[in-house]
Length: 157
Image 1 (cartoon, rainbow, N blue to C red):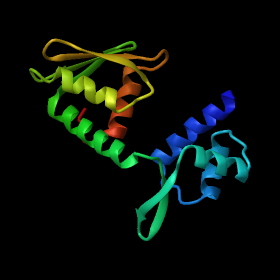
Image 2: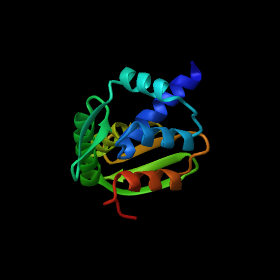
Image 3: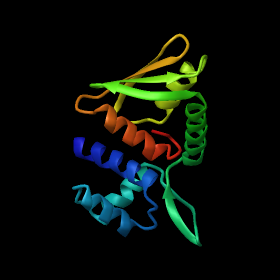
Image 4: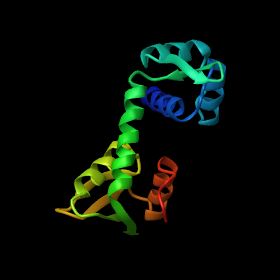
């Protein structure tokens, strides 16, 4: 059961981050991640996850998870809230401190939470202009900033 849960999580991550057009392509991605599954198992997993296909541009169709458009819109809004409110990011060990403009700490903390980064254990918004981010064991502040820049290319150093 644990293998299946890990495979389903990996499938969702792949569908969210890669433009996957076919089951064959998804099987290749899964194999690269260390999962050996049959086409029949993959079909059952796709049905279980309620995966559909949406226009991917250029006349292609790509896999999409239910509510993906809503999730992407929420992510875009979170990114804008983050960019509007943050001033700087510094860290020590597994604690990150994000300085914000006055009154923006709540929206910046919520934005980090809404990005759904696996590296983040949680955030605490200060009263006015500071957000504390607790990172998982083994994740550094540099890792966090790198991941944030991947999600928010406009993020400045």
